[in-house]
Length: 309
Image (cartoon, rainbow, N blue to C red):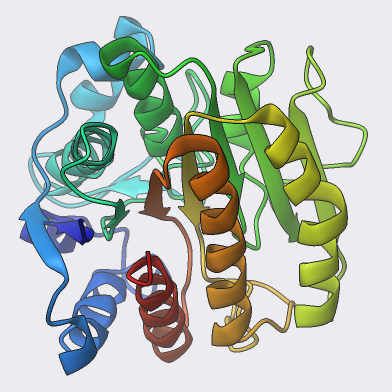
C-alpha cells in the first residue's frame, strides 16, 4: 500500500479577491514541492465532485442551496469580511469535499495506506449553517460522517493543528459521542473559540491552546500531554487530520514558531496511534498555511512522513 495525493485544477479557480491570503498559489506551491524525486512513488488521483448525499450528512439542504445560489456568474460575491466567492468557487468547494470523501473511500477499503487532499477552499471554520474564515463546506466533518455511513466506522477522530481553532468542526461534533475533535491552536486568535473548558457534550472535544510565540517544544508538549493520550483511549476507526500549516514561524496570519520538523513529528505520532487503533488509516486534509515557502516545505514534510507507513 502507498500514500495517495488527491487534488484537482479546479482548486485554482477559486479566488477570494486581490491580495487575499487564501489564494491559488497555495496549492501550486504544494504541487511543486511534491514534484521532487522523493515523491515519485506517491499515487495521485483527481478530486471528484462531492455527492449531495455526503454534503447533507453535515449541512442541511437549505444551507447547501444558499451556497449554490450565492455563487456568482462573474466578479466576486462577498459572504463576510474574510470570505468571498468567485465563479470558480462552488466547483472548487465541491471538489475539496469530494476529495475528502474519495480519500476516505481509498483508505477505508485498503486501496492505500493513507491520503493527503491538497485542495482549497479549506473547511474547518464552516459550521453547520454558517460559512466563515475562508470556508464553505466542512470537509473534515463530511469525511468523518461518510466514513461512518458508507464504511461502518464506529468512531472517527479529527486532529487539527492549524494555527486557528476549527470552530466549525467543533460545532458539528459537539453533541456527537462517536466523533472526537482535538485541536492545538493559538489563543487569542480568530475565531476566538477553543478554550480548554470547551469539551463537548460527551467530553470528546479536546482543546490544547497555545500562546503567541510558542514553538515546537510547547506544541509537542500539548500533543503529548493533552491530545495523544485521549486519542489513544478513544480508539478511533479512522483519524482525519485537519492539516493547517499556518502555525509555521513564517506564516503572516499567526504568531507561533513551528518548523517543518514539528509537523513531521506530529504526523508520525498520529500514525503510531493509527497503527495500533485502526490499521494505520489516516486521511489528511489541507486547511491553512499562507506563507508559500513555509507551506510548501511543511506540506512536503507531512507527506514524506505519511509515506513512511
